[in-house]
Length: 293
Image (tube, rainbow, N blue to C red; front, side, top):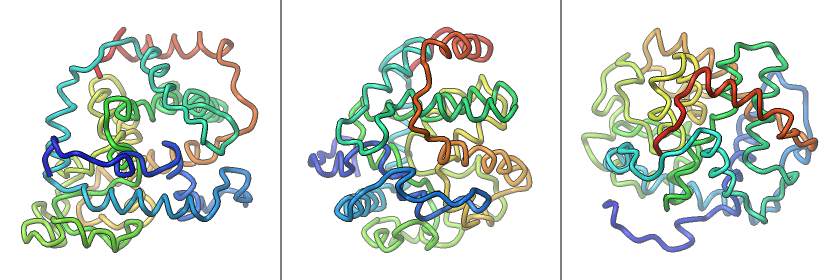
């Protein structure tokens, strides 16, 4: 697949809105230590929308190849599209709000504030709070023309056999890597216990933001950002054979983070003007004045 390949509108945006895959995550990976919550407490979709989620993953699994992920890194990690303050990037992200979103009228920024405020209320370190606030900032990729299936969705290693623990594994039948002898074995181009830093992940907002933030935040925060959509591992342990001891230690932080991302949604919106000074100070403490996107 070449970067110049044209996609239809349906292939670019198969979901009704950018957050729709989160509902699918809640159904597939309920948090075991959370009290039962009825589906309507999060997002409620009719069956046709579920078909749309399947279409999203059909495209994701067809096109997310090793070469695609490598090409996207070469394309986007030049960070030559925009330069702006972090808060400006968050407001830029907020233009992704879609009127078709069936949630509780909370925009992207409010979701991030809710996540961060839930982390802060539990007394975690301020870098953890900041991570909750910025963790989805990489979704600005959609504003640079990236199709939704290359921005959100469960992430997974490329360059080795696709695990049957990945959602809708049958769709990998159409991925050319599944028939490539270099990539379709258990280890593929990797070795046992090589460590995730040596593994190419499918392209999306997690990897993109990690690359933006890797020089500024503690390693625990970087693992949360880079792997918070890696559900086949932190819920199914599908790639234990590629992880090393340090990965396992750091994944305890990923596990701490995910409930805040998935279960912090509330119909009461945060009061932005009251919270903005705190988060601006937090950004100044850890991050540069501007970031390149």
